[in-house]
Length: 313
Image 1: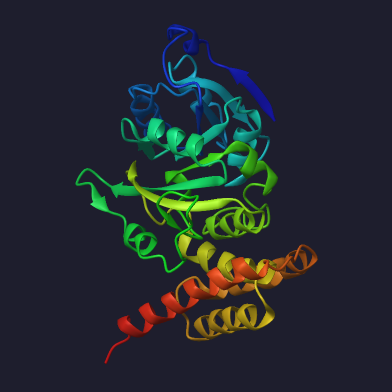
Image 2: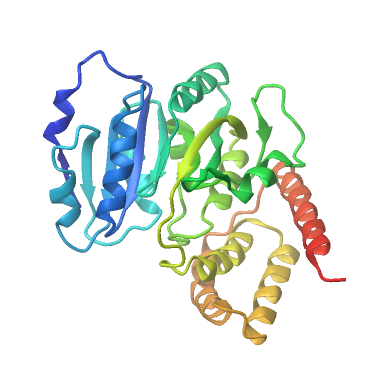
């Protein structure tokens, strides 16, 4: 992996911005979208330094971002790191808190400063999940309502609503907590990788909370490009095998097998790759402590209720 600083960072006044935060951005072959994100981040009042992890196949992105005023450091792994690129960025960050953006997302003004204030005020807080608005019309991401309705009981030393999920491009982490939990798991690579990190943070005593006063903007231009549905199916089963009791894992595997048998889009590929990765998952299996498993079961029951409501009469 190569790493380089960009000269544009020196254009900012030394006293500008909030010194508590870095923004980590992962990108792959989407130069125009990345530049839009960097421009939006550069315009924030917090003026956060940005670490870009470039998973691209050529030097186009490197040439485009060189000298951009937002970019503090460009990391170029030798292979596509997927979500693990965020781990690289956090390790290189020099601030106590790190916000994540993808190359098609950014933060609304003031949200990062408020996130840092909340992390300062709540020392057990490991991760803050923000409200996400999608597209030029600022539509509510469906995940917002799910997080707001989390059945996990409130905790007096945490802000917002305790959750065991979030959107990776709309969260802020305490660097210490993120590193202690191991960051995003290498076995999952990409797609639904957030749940496992939330489990691992909670298992180590860190709080994970949804705070709708924080807001990220997401402008996905080409949904489906990464086969996300297939990856989410695969990683859901792998996550249960890595952390949940065997009955939960077996039910998840059985649902995927039934979907594959029914010819659901992406299910056969998801099942094949789940089986291929299963030995590695079993070798790294570590079940959740009882209090986190209890919270996970509350969420399971909530999800089962939603499936029943959505079923045709």
